[in-house]
Length: 387
Image (cartoon, rainbow, N blue to C red; front, side):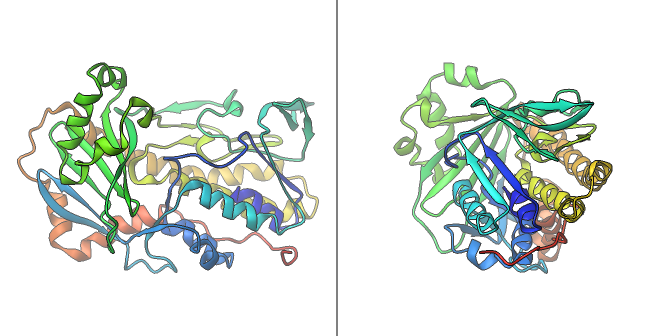
């Protein structure tokens, strides 16, 4: 959707295909980081975006081995919005669609999935859709997620993950400050995202263990959730059946190549990220900005951009690999030992204690998490003022 906005803004006739009839997806892409908020500032849209419902996270902490610590402080980032905005995905996408529609070159078609490529003489020239249409185009951007139809034929680098996640809500009383945090202890990893009047909860467990947990029964699961702390005492009010618990099967991988003539793969379709840090949506938007920076101007002038697709991949591959490398290190050295219960945690690790005791140190993880590696700035042109 962001790519559609940027290409249409440059005067490139752009069609976004969305397989669903709405944007109502829960537990998806809700963490809008400072890097993404800066993109909207550069587009002159930040104030309007922040009119949509959201919660602001200025600091992040954790309860580690029973001790409450402050670990990350975004407030000192030199950006227009030095915080994470927790915004429901449907609000975010609806906003971007509204802004994109102001450009005559933009069209959004919903309830229409791209299911196959049209190829001629070794080049992608369009897509076939679920409702029988054939749509011709000069360039196809595949942004259809980790299960993309258009990954076929590209080399795949599989990193893997030691965990899966159950997502659910727990009601709470809204407080002036945002108290999002993680709970880390031997055999336990639980994330509480403060959404005002409810917690968005992530119950992290060893890979492939969903059926075992379900087989133990809902009451046993709720008892494990309540054991996390006082924040989870009301879980029975919102989790009354297993249907109230959504499974996220965690996948971490990336394509070794993102393009061929007429086709560019970006976002989760190019690199499936771990939920660690909530960075997936933000990396995807950085891909969109980079793609528009490289391609939108030449496309608006009618140029052939096949030779430029590699520049987008080259620009975004390094931050993807480094981010996944950091996620893999956290998985191997923190998450897997915690879930296995192999190392009894008598006190928080030294690094966590250091971050908590030296406030200046909290700015480093805030910089890495909030802005990412090689953050993008909007350099694609605006062909004409929006309607």
